[in-house]
Image (tube, rainbow, N blue to C red):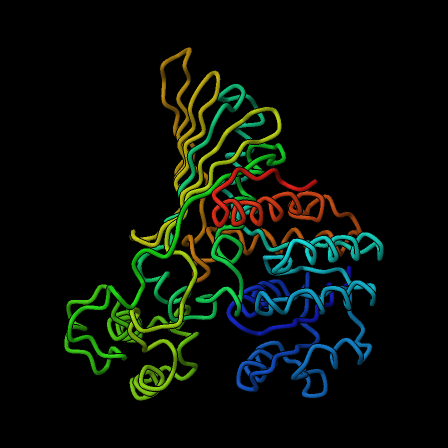
Length: 417
């Protein structure tokens, strides 16, 4: 069987990460063209994949208009740039792997879903947590009746103090008008994960939260606008100098350092911290997304769940407790334990988690699992391996929008059908 031919739109951290799967499995998939506005990223990816200069483009419309022989497209642009290329790719008859969220508005999410259905192409939304080994094991245990019927769930996403500062205070996702609100930008993974594990649509939601800490009024006395100039930087938990300088010193040239600079020298890093957004004081940025939020949800059939997202922790794997009629399941990403009410025994299960919980670690094996599933589906013409298609993920997206509406309005919101 010939390798699946993929075109990549967006050669940033996510697009580059997904494309590495093709390098590791050249008999299964090839990246045959790339569209990326940043010339350095574009040239680097083209060189890694042996893509001819004629098949590299600054803009995605040029790529799709070129009529390149391809089977599918990976769309890994910024959140606001998902809809137009997805609609165009569907019209071109290309199967689509689309970075989450589908779109920054519920109306556009529905447009994309309708477009792929009308075109008869496959869509895999990059809800990578569905594909992680620990999720597959949790789902298998739940579906086998190991804890009876699920009654309620507690789920916590520990964003991590440094990750919040990097991505959601200084970085691309710091403002809703630049990307999207926090639940959609980060935690739609978790809302979707809960819907997948429970196995029912989300019916109603309420939510509380806000931007508590990363505000100008919390700026320490004597703090400068940039970490490099700051007298209180040595005592600041959010020091850019410590975060990125420490990563450089350890020779870790991956995310998040790779977002700050593409040249891994002290001189280049200092220049980026002096001039770019990632050297700014976290109390002197233009961020407006929340740093903590709680979502209460009710699923069809009455199952309840509480999801908590907050920045003020060390990060790491999500932490979940599922409460059933015959037992309890505790999951922390790299460990799963089940308690049986009848036997009174705790049973340990090894989910064989691969890598860390963040993008640098491949989301615990979820990135690789998604690529395996998508390429298999395209190669065989069978969408069954795709766990995050339009039917599976539209409800979780609409529930995420409803939760943000509930937070802003102080109400309980029924999720659109």
